[in-house]
Amino acid sequence: MSPMFSRLFSPEDPQPQPGPTLSPAAEFSRVALLTNPKAGAGVSGLVALEVQRHLNNAGIDVIALQGADEESARRLAQTAVNSGDVDALVVCGGDGLINLGLQCVVDTPVALGLVPAGTGNDHARAFVVPGNAAKAAALIISGRTLAMDVGKASFQDGSSRVFGTIAAVGFDSLVNARAARMKWPPGQAKYTVAAARELLSFRAHHARLAFDGVEHTMDVTLVATGNTAFYGGGMRMCPEASPIDGMFQVTVLEKMPRRHALKRFHTVFDGNVLAEDGVLSFEARRVDIDMPGVDAFADGEFFGPTPVCLEVQPKAARIITAATFDTAPGSH
Image 1: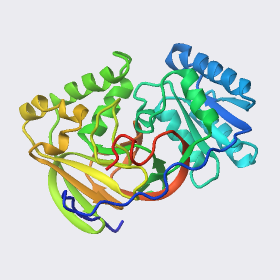
Image 2: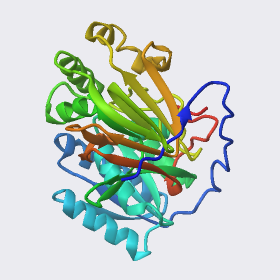
Image 3: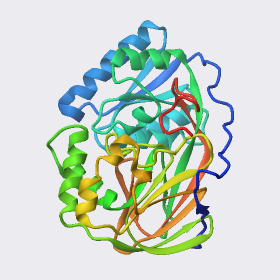
């Protein structure tokens, strides 16, 4: 895999100029509604029923998709998208199920709708989608869409997957893995507890990085490659990321003492992480990461082992949102 990457980002660099923001409102006549009815002790299924009722009342036909497992959910969603009979694929669930939906709609005219009903809900946070079922349904009914960038992760075995939020390698990927195994506490607190536990034993890893062809070799705590600002249930690790500028914002935490990391952990929630000592920020269209023995996670899901190549796919998907380049969290 030949590395390619860019330059150290500085405030003086010219900022990417936004393209068109929201598309004119579409008139959705039929949507597919994908959910895991067992998620959240059945809460996701109840939320989906409420959303379906609101959409039906607005004159929108709804095709309900309920996969028994990830593979069946993917098959149902892909079949609906490929059929040409739906205007949107609406996903009621968390970031993992939304990532599954994103795989299906990328490079198609079918829009992706979100109804947040998961643990982290970072896609919904990035695209300002309400957590209330009635309000989320109203947003879908509005038909306002945005052409969003997606990230593509490619691995040495030839496999690839796309992601919408942040790809994590290092400490943050270990936090994702631990949080996925935890049943308690719920919501954002799960990631906070998982991070605190990982900090007790984490060590920096030697990494080979390349940003648009510019190579760096260093010991790092984590590398977070952001298409949007948030991951881990609201951690603003890539505060300068924008999903419509054709670039990743990459946050690299160099090797740091554990005590310092624990003391400054709150900065990933308030958006001030880039002001910390030992934190580097880059912009790039392509990011290559080789961190032996460490896996890559994205959208909270296991993606694969490093080395990994991450590339921006500009405006590769349409998402239903009221956010614009100027108002979306994480915009420049």
